[in-house]
Length: 138
Image 1: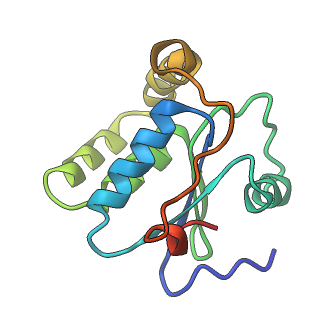
Image 2 (image 1 turned 90 degrees about the horizontal axis):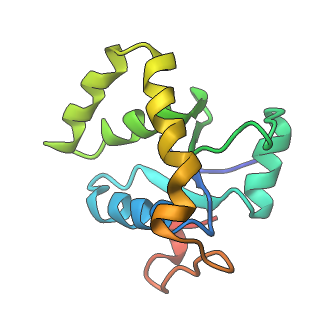
């Protein structure tokens, strides 16, 4: 996979039609003080390529993904907490929950993910970034 993220950048893959996911990405963009992240929808060509490269079963994976060239790919609660750990104080304090076993963290994550469309709604198509944010989206 020939994906050029730039120096020390990480790619967040998210459900492009989910209102909760969209709001989360907007929150991350606002608080990414060190410009660490790039973004793409799971439904995009780049998203599909990563899903294929890592042999991710999309029927079983209802998750945010965090990809970096150096560290590979993180899923579900681990991805969310790794992202939070890089967003500065006080958001970085969420990383303390990485000590909780993944099966417990992911149970909570999966419960929210399973209900996100019902609770937050769903769009007909992926969001289109504004002109000033376009460089952050692949």
